[in-house]
Image (cartoon, rainbow, N blue to C red; front, top):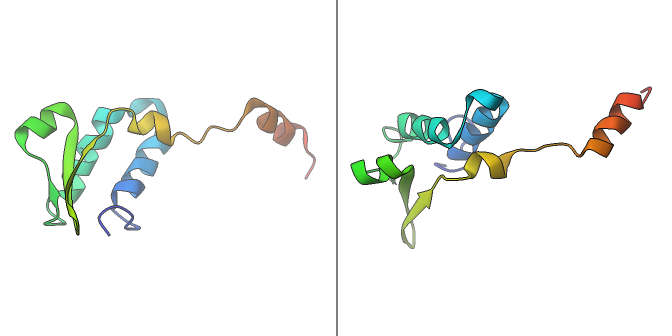
Length: 93
């Protein structure tokens, strides 16, 4: 639930941040994750050192996994290739 929860999960937060465009970056994304996840799940952790580095941890069934948010926003962008964009622009449907 913490990762793929419909409202407030990490992937939902990532999608919301990407939709906001240029105003958002990895730092705004991880800040939103801290705000929404720290109180909603006891499996979410982010100590002072992790926060300074844009990281957080999630306790999974197999143990604690640390995530580094550097590049999350760039990797999640769903840009349409130029050719497809032109095709859509020129279609009559």
